[in-house]
Image (cartoon, rainbow, N blue to C red; front, side, top):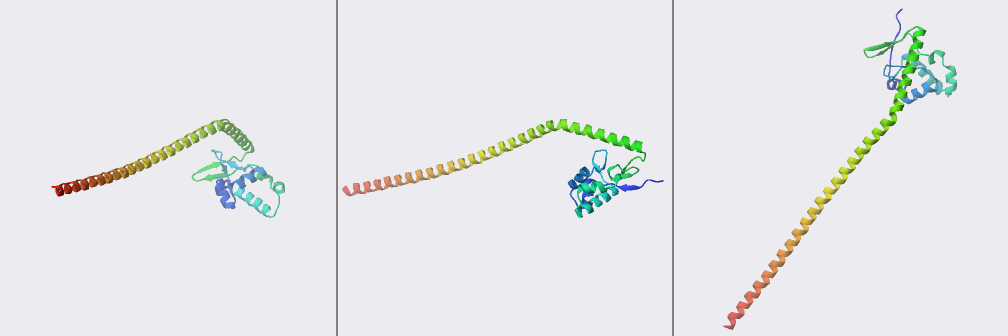
Length: 200
């Protein structure tokens, strides 16, 4: 008999369908010990069956029932991996085995893989954090240096313009003073020559 085909959704798609935030689905999964399937990248895969369970949880929550009581009311299949199901993601599909032996092996493999990934991330997190911190510090320092240099250049240009304005003003005053002196000398010369002519 052909196994049922179910569409598979990412956490953001499932959250949108449920009209909740993605962190709510993760919280329910953790608090209620739900076993949500994951793809080869380790991302959660939600099936129509999972969404039905989440809808039930949502309805019970709306009736002011605590998560502890909801956990007791959930069917035992909700916390076990769903076997004999196709999960379709676009053109690719992942089929889980219907034999309990293979399902157990798959669960163990997922658990081992999850632990390996967690350990790797834990070991690299400090190194990554230091690297990111160093890059951010370098970028911030470069940005500050650029802004200081830009401010200094703008101030220097402003001082040059001010200096030029002062020099132009001083030159104009000197020229005006020279013109007055020349004018006075000319007047004296004219006056002196007039007196000389009168004296003759």
